[in-house]
Image (cartoon, rainbow, N blue to C red; front, side, top):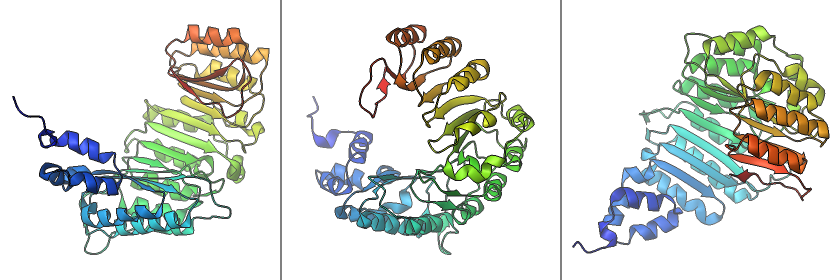
Length: 383
């Protein structure tokens, strides 16, 4: 019988173990034995990287970047934005990432954790990411370009200057999330149109309402491009200039005609004027996710969903006020919506209503349904 030893563990298991460790712990683990050290230096370990910048000691990731950066396919950065040191190290990391002699990077995700510092505009972060999206250095061998870009959780204001280079240098882009956590969005519809026209393989697009236009919807309906699978639209405070833009149903009809499998997520933030919500809803939109976060009576919206979105709705999130009428309308919607997998209602419902919902839809995966008042925040329950 073969003696059990750390040296006998297969490479893919060692890679899985090391991938969960911070870089300084990876170095220690790589010194366990020759086999582990060999795997530590394997390109396979460094293809998919999750980097955290939460303290000064995380600067050691810069050394790994210089040594193994040419192997990176996926980079997921988590920066604790509260400390200026963390933000500086993050910018240095992205700048060095842009200057690698070989580039295989396909997936790029950046998120902020911690509290947003007062008066922090994020200009240096904007410039660092802009450098990565721009043309590669002269001597850089570009083996792969970006296919997946997720900047949906950064509390900085984006502009056209950031995303025009992305379109020009990454034609294979398939996923783009620019729904930043800031209340300010300055990405114009002309910029978005440029992205859509250049990146014809784009199948998942997540933007603010402010950035959309009839020309953008028309471009997405072009039969020469890959069918769009998911469109997420977030309506927030800065969209007030764009609220004059209300598209006729014909544009949504044209969009869904070419994109038969299209799913649309509509997000109405807490600063979105409630009076505008019914104006923006259209029966022709294949809504799969609907989030309303502005704490107003929403009976009309539940009725609208029950009448027009019951075939497509999968996730419903409502921040509203309790009433017996709301309980009744929710029960009707739940009864008709066979695709529903998540239901989150941030107000107290009758105990019988909650029980009836669970009986009608036992296949729900995540819920926030309370029959008694509890302190906020309410955490979703995974079933």
